[in-house]
Image 1 (cartoon, one colour):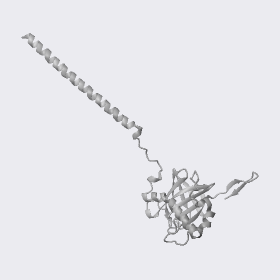
Image 2: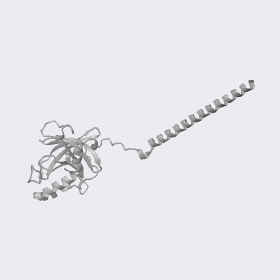
Image 3: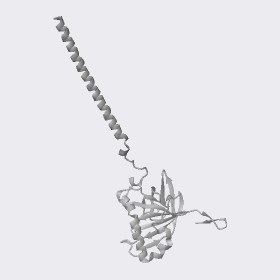
Image 4: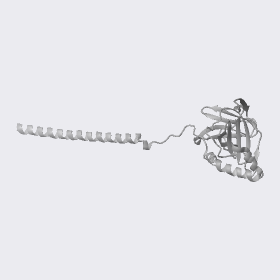
Length: 250
């Protein structure tokens, strides 16, 4: 009787040990499976193929409305049309005389104008429903200002009843983008870009020569397709004369 009882206890111990071994094996499988999952997840996270490029800070496309972004993209076509109007309505010689200022292909590297005071002159191009006769009108110079505001440059026309002003944003090696507004009052405040879509003004800024820049504004007034503003620093520029001397010129 004692022998049977001993054999029964041995068999129960073996069954318990076998069940415990199965539990340990199952736990190891689960743990290994979890490690495999973690490795797989980590490989997805660090994979360069899945990296998404973050938007650039100070990208004008993050600020401009879709309508104004399209206006910037259409400046080339507007320019060609405005020049055709000017040449067809008695302005061919005037276009030629303006040289690089009105040449769409004259943009040079380093488009940012240095901060300071400028002599600015507007050449208005193109025909509209409000203006069916004059394809080119040139105005007298006025003062305008380029300043620094944080990481950006700003442009402001100092006087006049049609005063554009706003910020200049980097775009390419030969072009900056202007996002601003227009004030119709000589001394009135300039709305911030986006405050009033009706007063929004966009354009581009390019360098066309030594100490020469231009700002091109599409549909800035009802009288023209394009305003081209010439910017010349309000300071004498030292030039080297023949023979080694220096002279001052504007």
